[in-house]
Amino acid sequence: MRSCRGCGGEVQDDFRFCPHCGKAQRTKIVEYFQGHPEVGDGGLRVSVYLTEPQHARLSVWRGDEVEAAISLDPHESGRLARFLLSVTKQPQQSFVSRVLSRL
Ligand SMILES: [Zn+2]
Image (cartoon, rainbow, N blue to C red; front, side, top):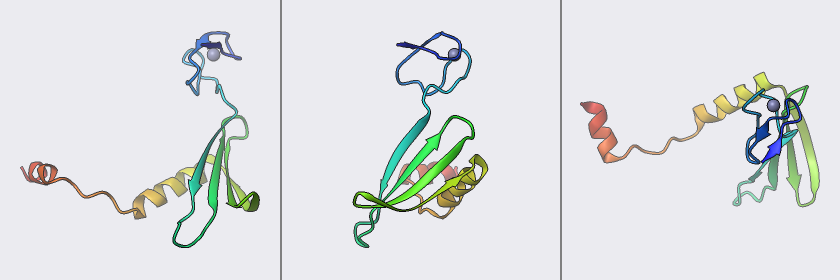
């Protein structure tokens, strides 16, 4: 447990936002995506900044060096997420799901 910097309320360590006032408890959240191994790409680091101005910083890494970076505002970040979801192959439905969907 820790105290919220906004309202002083108790917040569990793994909470990203205060359940009392909604203030972001972290300044950013980072996720690393490995490049395609057959192509020999590096990786993509995505840092989502929760403070103003909110944005997502995408940086392309090869080894220990950044080759390129760009920041997207929340609207463009959402558009990118929807685009990736729309073109990504969805896992096949199980036999039971297919049968149930026909009922
Ligand atoms: Zn709070």
